[in-house]
Amino acid sequence: MQIDTNRFSWFQVPENVKKLLILAADTWHNNSESENYMQQAITEAGDNPDILISAYRYFYYKNNYVLALQTTTKLLDKIKKAENFPENWEQLKLILINRREESQIRLYLNAYSATGLVLAKLGNIEQAKEISIRVQEIDPKNDYGAGILLDILTRPAEEDD
Image (cartoon, rainbow, N blue to C red; front, side, top):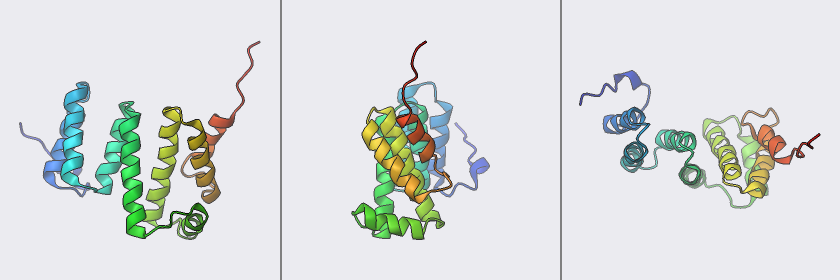
């Protein structure tokens, strides 16, 4: 089968990985086949951030929140290691605030916020709240949606009339 990867020339990953991503999309309705292509793409691309982001979105929209969480965790760990981030949240928070306009930091905050969303979907509400609060402390403009998620998680249940 001939697969045209030229339409994704802006996506900087090897051609074989692009083909696997296209196959995952083309077989979307066959969960096992589609997921197999996505897993191959992840394996072949290693820790490529673009592939991890694509995989997170894929798993999220497939409602496979466990694999979505694994993918965001892998991306967060990759950035933590590359940036030599401290484990202590208060120290890390200062770094994230001071560098929040840098692309790598924005990617980290986006992935961290996504982790909160996935944790909420998995029923880990307290962890999701904690992450949302943390992201909101760094993101006063709510660029990452943490404020919206926190509002949803802390909104009192509506009473029936």
